[in-house]
Figure 1: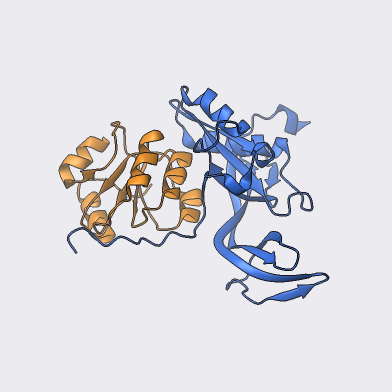
Figure 2: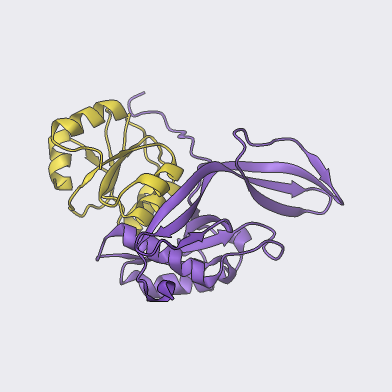
Length: 111
Length: 180
């Protein structure tokens, strides 16, 4: 499923520049160690973390985008860094569980 | 001989979680880092020869090996403390010069760094850095962008480096949700 389609269906807020790409699955964790060991490329990463070092982890694994849940405000320096490295950051007021449920509802699953 | 012929396909194996501890001796100003598998990171001060070590930081981390799924070769990475993404903070740093050169090809530069003190601890060899780079590029699957991993030895000054270290610390979100 295309990233733009997911954004439209779930009304996700786009915080960075965006390049549409294929999303293969969903990964949920708030630990960068978990991203390093278990995330897959083209995954959508659901997290509450907003630190700049999330960008370096997303970029390393080449994930499709990160979605910051629970309406957490992403700092401007994280957004600027993400734009420099073509990392897509989205946000939503939904909790991680609510968003995961909605993603399953539109046909996405863990890879 | 099999090793030389194989076009390795790497997989992360033997993953074990623990902590990277950074400690400092305030009598000699020496800083040291090490990895521990203890479930709770140690906090106690202790004496070791001329040093009186105090914990400065503990970050959750993990160790791993890479195994070739074709020939079974296992490469250990016990010397690797972490990776950090170059953000171009110093135009005179060799890492930034490489970053500038590769940015138009969408090749992102990461620095692999080992444990401190650098001159007292075994560090990653260039061969292992290349294996690590191959692993992440194979894992990314992307033809649009790549990863380049370089040694910490070419960082001009670690003390003033603003690279983004991938580590589970300082991650506390300080912003309240919107509308609250």
